[in-house]
Length: 432
Image 1 (cartoon, rainbow, N blue to C red):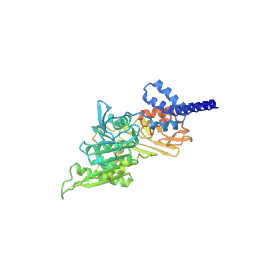
Image 2: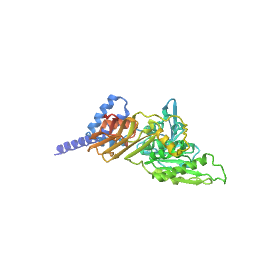
Image 3: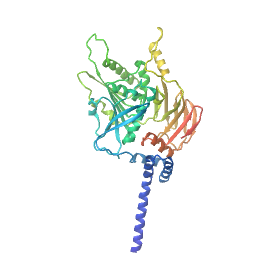
Image 4: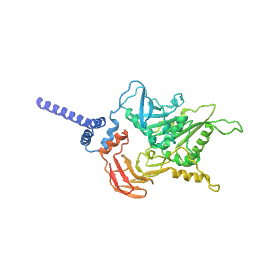
């Protein structure tokens, strides 16, 4: 009997070891996938992940956020250099929370402000990573086209180096940095859970006409706008940055109220300073999960949303930082200016209504749709329309290979696409 009991015990231990080994097989294969650059090895690891997960794409997606892909750091400061191309580099000074633990995901605040600006720091949670951008002039509304995707390069570099919660990435700007931050928020709204603009504004030409067109991009991105109201003596000529900023921000507040945009404001007098408590709510909320994404953009690189990416663009591009618009005496100047600006900008929208995906993008010859779990029910038929025409009707099959390639491209392991489709205007639909 003792001999039999001993054999049973040994078999039990072997079975437990096998289960433990099986439990670790999937994370080990995924970890190795992201650590190697050899394409043949990557294909072999995809096959291992498929076996270890029993072919479950959902199981792989659930495992991705728990991988250990980030280095540990000694101390609380670091520096990162991002190559934007064209010989332009961005220096990012990073402050890590005390006791930074690379095994957990932290919220991130991207800050465009002077080193001397200390007001905003009082509002920061203790567990947040702060990335101060040293030179961001190219990212403003009037920045050159080759650098239109510069902010997304910053974010990808930060995600690769630090373990970040991609649902809690925030943007802060102060002064001249706030003007750039506002432009970034408008053109890359899907990247941020919330935005704080302190003593800045959306600085664009023909702002009374252009603000209503651009602010719609923020329909799902909360933004707090704080500024100082200048105290002007009677009969004072209305000039200077403070006056212009106040006028523009009051106009923005009116548009936000009229269009029900998630924009809050706070105004203080010159003798006081803004309390960081007024924007605490921005840093507490995760990124909204949206089913509709409108986007007006200037350059094709600014057309990317969470659900859609423009692959081939055929429209003209608004270059240059000056735009003179002349009107006839009998013409409504504001209406005519708005029509000119609408023609200069381009727009797209993607909406998911149940199992139907509607894409509107007049100047897009080819687009990419990226779907994650929760966007649609993959067990049911999906209908895709492109500019009103049906391009696809049927079931979409999530893929482990697509999921891993998407995660590697974005280094976002919380919302990687498991289905990616390329759709051409002439009707071709191809998974990739």
